[in-house]
Amino acid sequence: MASSENTTASRWVASFHDPDDEMARRLRAGGLSATALTAAGASWDAVVIAPLERGLAALDALDVPLDSGFGVYADYRRYELIVHVAPGTAADEVSDVQGVRVLSRGSWVLMPTNGDGTWEAATLSRPSGFRPRYVDPVRLCAAVLAVDAERGASACAH
Image (cartoon, rainbow, N blue to C red):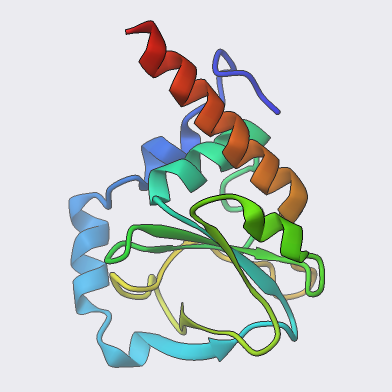
């Protein structure tokens, strides 16, 4: 995991914590046709992290590059991050992290179908169609716990 002094730190948090005015306009204009309920568990599973900023900070800690074929989405209404992981890899023990849940076979999630999506399902990073890349769910949850620990230590120092 990257340290907070890393020059790439806070890329996800800085880029997607709150949509800028242009992104907000596109999300409002998305309409019902911009999203669809999609079944998890076939092509991908998903790890959902709340709150959104916590998940973004975990991606920063892992040094996951922006726009490199990883499927990463935001639900700005529920303030959650949705990260695609390889199907069958989001083991039950991953969901033991408070504020993290796993969506696998039998689960449905609202996903963008075109453009940026909507407030409920916004595309932050599009998966590569030919060879999708996945974040390792165990490493992702470890990064969430590391972010929690760092924020806890930071809060105690003030």
